[in-house]
Image (cartoon, rainbow, N blue to C red):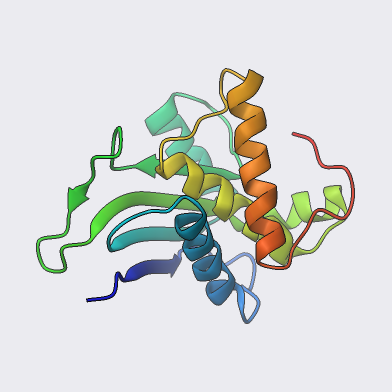
Amino acid sequence: MKDKIKVIISDDQKDVKIPTGTRMLVRRCCNAVLKNEKFEGSAEISVRFVNNEEIHRLNKEFRNVDSSTDVLSFPLGENGEYDINNDTGAKMLGDIVISVETAVAQSQDYGHSFQREIAFLTVHSMLHLLGYDHVNGGLEAVRMREKEEYVLMQIGLPRSNSYTE
């Protein structure tokens, strides 16, 4: 049986109309990261589009950070071990929460498309779900950024100008 990647996407905000093709782009990003990382087996990922107010609430509740942010990752696995969906046998990788309001603002700030921003945030978060981290900076952050850019290039959204966090 071929491995299946299930990406469950919900739009839990009313502030920004999600452009046609965005859901397909998010699915392509998730698939590209898993392929690039040579992920084995079926997988499930949940992606929620929210507004700044909701991501602020989640950031405060789960990370004790009293501000909004662009994306949050809630990995369900640790060290390559994941919970399994008993109905499907898929590894449940976790949840990605994207602030659509912030994605719009950042795409304007960085001078690239909304699609490129959503793709970057999805790829970035997928790497977190697979155990990558950049909090300590250094080589880990560089390696994560290289992987992000490689995947974005693969799906046809290469960096068009200098992009730093």
